[in-house]
Amino acid sequence: AQTVTQSQPEMSVQEAETVTLSCTYDTSENNYYLFWYKQPPSRQMILVIRQEAYKQQNATENRFSVNFQKAAKSFSLKISDSQLGDTAMYFCAFMAYNTDKLIFGTGTRLQVFP
Amino acid sequence: DVKVTQSSRYLVKRTGEKVFLECVQDMDHENMFWYRQDPGLGLRLIYFSYDVKMKEKGDIPEGYSVSREKKERFSLILESASTNQTSMYLCASSLSGTGDMNTEAFFGQGTRLTVV
Image 1 (tube, rainbow over the protein chains, first blue to last red):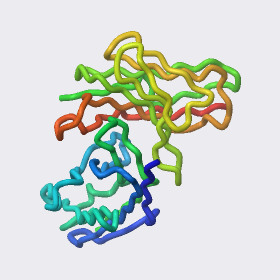
Image 2 (cartoon, each protein chain N blue to C red):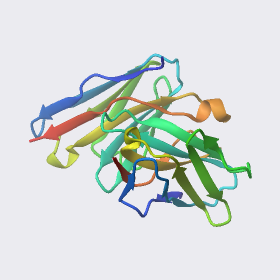
Image 3 (tube, chains in turn purple, brown):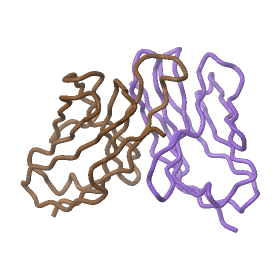
């Protein structure tokens, strides 16, 4: 069975600074996707970034980038130039290729302060 | 704009009541999901449907059932609500199959259910 672990329940960062959220996972699968989802206080969960396991290059989406270490089963999210609107719960998630089901971590609450 | 709509944002029900949580998506997605979100536990999958009338148990199906009579609608049913089912419930949908375009799940705004 796959598991996803987020060891930082809460983080805070000053506006314009950089913050990194950690995620580790455990799986025996070789082909899978990894995701970071954001849930703002309004509660609508949205996809931030995704990574395919076979791609060596780390995914980036504007100010968001990941550090994917497949051998270490680590998938961290870096937010550069943090903005007040980045304040949210962030969930790391895993999906094996042979299933459409997402397995989530416990989440990290990020507070961006002025 | 893609949409997953949950019928209620807040519900208060009494212990023993039968509770229906409704979810509708307008994206013609094959997959629909019900998750439960609790502090410190993240999102846990209750049930999953990959087609009309098809369903699969998730990690915590006990005390719940589901119905999918139409592709766009997925209902979560609490047969006899209990206080330990007080939680946030999230519905999601996605396309079926592998490929980047198919992996993104779209979520509703959630229903906060309180059972008293």
